[in-house]
Image (tube, rainbow, N blue to C red; front, side, top):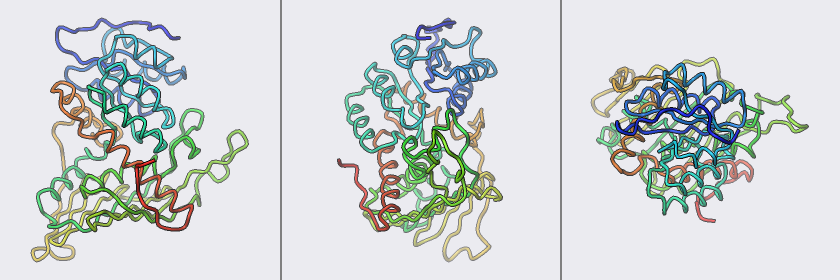
Length: 374
């Protein structure tokens, strides 16, 4: 199916921003639900060559009350982009299939939100970033962990000077294994970019955001020790890492560390982000949405400030504690105002660069310099 079917009536008189969603797997359907919760936005087109995924997207749009006729449906992303039905597109295809629809959408002058990671390789990231230099609409990378309420509060505390001069950032994710995806595409590093790109780009982006300097060097240790060891697809065994430690050095002397374990299902806090400076420490924890603030000279071990962080703007919580909704609020505001994206293509590229360097460090058994240059 390459022609649009079931075209919705478009209300241009009331300034409704029309969205197309390319790739309607788990995250594509998550985006559909979040867009439906926005004021002045509607999903007018969906695209996926996998009919069961398209069916789930149709159901997601219906459940969200996205119009009476439902979005137009495509199996070819270029046909959606050329349809004239959309002002913006969300690209939620598998990682290694971001490049073509992203370049096509930018060439068509559409606003774009592309899921993380920006691309699965640095070569592809460079191509996309270069194309973005002549793109006059908004191009935004879906690194929504920035918007999780306790994490956003942690960033604000660091910015306001609570920890003094930032010295260390530590991020721990102890969680369950990767979800099953269509055709098991995420079982191979060639498709994902590797676990430290696919999963940890979120955390490298947070580090880059907090430090506000470029990462310079990475030292990592990791392996595939528990998950997917007996999984074979087309005669090839899954090769995705399920645990790692990654240390990141920055130009200004700040150090970052990621502790990832994907066979730690039995845990209370799935994600913990910690920022420490010469004047104090701030911690955020999920899923409890907790923030802890400790100031040297004022607090002591066990006696810090603690509260639950709530963002009243969230109208749809979804699978990311409301972060995807807040991300979409920012994206929509940038579209309406003509402003810059809060998470740029370059931000996405640098997050991938750290992940790529981390994988190279594991392979070489030594520290690796971080660079986005060819």
